Length: 401
Ligand SMILES: C=C(OP(=O)(O)O)C(=O)O
Ligand SMILES: [Mg+2]
Image (tube, rainbow, N blue to C red; front, side, top):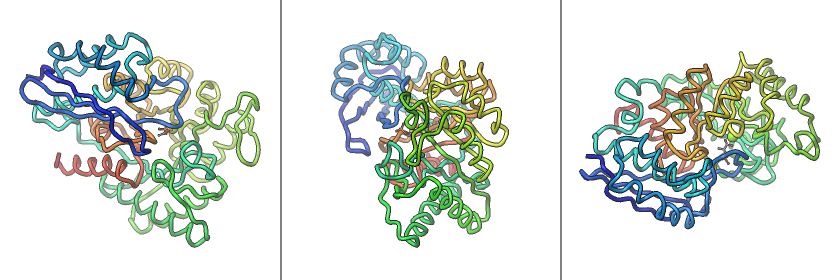
């Protein structure tokens, strides 16, 4: 029933206006699934390789489609993803492009769910999954590689940890976003938005900490539940080999100073989440910071782990971090992403399923987070390509998908 009978690939726009890959998968019994690849800006050195969309499409048509059409069942995700790996023939998807791979992988999952008549999260997670909902981490203020002339730290993220439902959590993050707008206006600090819809004011990181603290407190009082905040430092973007340290507008911090700085901020603001506080090659520094604050906060590896089980295993062995960011396009297939989540869970690491800065209206990650009982999802706070996932989470919780 779920035998793949056709795959159509095309170039479509992502949220930055760049070309990305869209895949349609059709099956023998009329099943249909469509997936679109997202794209990063602060990409990790060890991520799977994205090719220019046209090239990725041409390569996938040549190498992958003959191995999938009439050969593989869309309902068997591991077979689909194994065929993508075999067609690619490399260990980083540079053969067919991780963008083609992830678009086809997600489209096949949706086609499989369509034939079964089940929501995607149930197809991916099984019937006993889907009663836990992730807490959404909402990007509220940001800079780094996502906006010019803004904060050095890439993301200040609202974390509505006390929300009684996904719906309340999503609305709380949007309210924090609005509250920050009002605080910025009061301070005569006009701000545009970065790639993910976060405010990108020209303020110091210290001022951004103060503004976030004030905003989450105000909204927590209004909503009547706890809202904390966290960071994506994107440390690999700040780290400069030549300087042997982390380059901020107000000077360079050595690795020891960076660890101390982050640990102080965790204490001062009760941060619940710190992603990529250190460079993507520095497991040891991650381990030092985790030893200091790992019982108070999530120390999450994004560029450090790149959703890769081998890099995650190295981190587990070194006690580096206590959580992993999961980005399917960083590794190329849903199977690889789920394998990383399963290793994380088995090792006591929390999983945070994540969007990319360049996104589409695809909602697969909302389903993946529910399917795997991931405790957190990071998918922005506002903006159509972000609300696509957030609204899908509200629908999943409401049994309306
Ligand atoms: C979402 C992120 O940004 P990008 O997609 O640019 O890597 C991130 O760094 O977590
Ligand atoms: Mg990150």
